[in-house]
Structures are given as C-alpha cells and as structure tokens.
Length: 381
Image: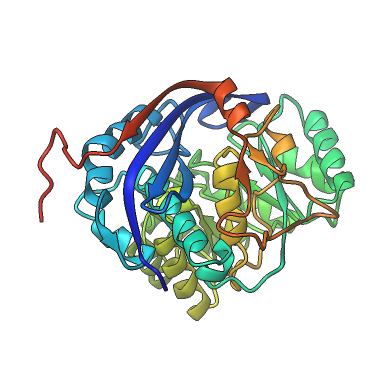
C-alpha cells in the first residue's frame, strides 16, 4: 500500500447549531464550536476529521479550544512533512502527548481518510469492515416529564430505529423508564446515566432490573472501573462503560475486573481509529459486544463512525442517527440518511462523503493553514 506524506493541514473553525437542545446529566447543549481538520497530502488529496469536543470540559477534560491548542502546538508538527507508511502508526507517533484523545483522534482520523483515498479504498475496507449496512439507534436527552419521553420514543420507534437510548439522572429515571416500558414493552431500550450515580444508589438502580434493559451506560464515576465491578455484581442489568474507557489498557482492566458486560467505543474518546480497532478486537476475544456512541458530530465524524461500525463485533446499534436529526444543514454530501433503521456503509473512496465547501463557509468563523513543522514547544523523541 502507498504511504502518505502530509504537506499541510488546514484548521476550519466553525460554530454549529443543533436543531433542538440536547440535555444530559451534564447540562444542555444548543450549539458548539467544532474544528474541522483537513490534511492535504503531496498529491493534493484531502482527508477530513473533526474535534468532537464540547465547549466545556464536562464529558472529559478537553474543550474545542484546548483541542485546537494541542493540534497546533504539539500534534500537527509531529506528522507534518513526514513519510508515514500506514495510519496505524500515528497513534504511537502522538503518544508523547498524554491523554488529549479527542485532539489526537481529529488528526488521526483525517490521516486514515487520506490513506484510504490514496490507495483506492473505502475507509471500511482499510479498517477491516465486513458489513454493507449498519443498524442505527437513537439517543434521547432528558425530558421534562415521562409523558414527553414516551412521546419522543414513539416518534423514533415509528421511524424504524433499532435501539432507543434514554438519558437518565436521579429524579428522572425509574418513573421515566417505567413509562416507556409500559407503552413499549418490547422495544430495545437502554439507559445512559453519564456518571450521575454512586454506589449509594445500588438499591435504587436495582429497580431498573425489572424493565429488561439492554444495558445501563456509565452509571458511576467517569474514571471508575472498581466500583462498577461492585455494582455489576449487584444488578442483573448489563453495565456498559463509556467515559471510563480511554484506551486498550482501560478496556483490558475493566474486562478482567468484571466491571462491565458491554463497551461503548467512541473514536474521539479513545484517541482514534487504531485504538478503536484494538479495543474492538480485545472485546471480541472476550465475548464483550461493542457499539459506537455519538458525540453530536457533524457528518465528517459521523462518517468515520459508520465505517468503524462495519467491523464484526459492533453487534449493538450505535448512536449514528442521520444528520437531519441533529443539524439544520450538515456539511457533507450526500446527506447521511437512514432507511428502515439502517445506514448504508459507503463504498466510495475514503469516508465516502464529500465536504460541501459552500455550506462549510456558512458556519466558518476562521481558518488556519499550517505548512511548517515549527512549533512553539519542543517535541521530545
């Protein structure tokens, strides 16, 4: 396969607005700043990634501002104007920076896109994907009342989504899940707690067991794998870990401790596609099913999610709903769409979607072109 040589990187700074507010235990999001990363190789091929950060450090320690800082001062200088044989080596190339996984993933995913295009493949092909289509789930933010939640669930069930994820928090959990189950006893249903509970809530969380949930996602602290093992022994509902898993090593330890029965793989959270593949393969060996969570992405990162979900052990529908569910006007073409609960995995080169530069201009706040390896900070190694 042909290696890649990146001659320049363009950072497109954008402000995007959601069609409707999205509420979790962290708070409510109406708009966010997104840095679109365009890497350009010596033959003029562009590859695309994005920072899936929020404006505030609530999901993890990163924000869009800090991700851009890491990209400009540390990460981009590491890969610029270097011959790279395969994007699978980029994760190790960027490992001199601790954590900052979303910043790393924004750059690494763009490199995978260039590599696939240069070698005449779809991204799914170079990742080892086997599926032609992926099942899609829908994530629903915390609603004001159980009745409002039931109404939302009904709307998405009619649209054909294969899984419904409901955000919960103390005071908006048992009654809400119970109302959904009463109306929809057979719909594939899961709860996402976003670290809203502690071990003091064990007896409370046991009440969810009777609702036959697919899983409860990240009920305890964002950095915990010990207490989750205790909780899993006390409840029958499978625990899925999200925020606790930042790497292959985190996944390995969680599996060995019995902290979960399912793992949510988010490309941004684990630092890119290569680490996502490693976690996927580890989970497959241990019969731990995986699925792909969402980070309110534009069509660029959503496309990467689609291709990754084509891997064999992604057996649970992911949060990869069509663009129209989140954005008034996405920046990829064709628009990402769903039919009967499935999205087709693109067979075109790279991510399989083109960037609509006219639409990109409409949400653009500024652009920066980086073509020098100079950095304001020394790079070790």
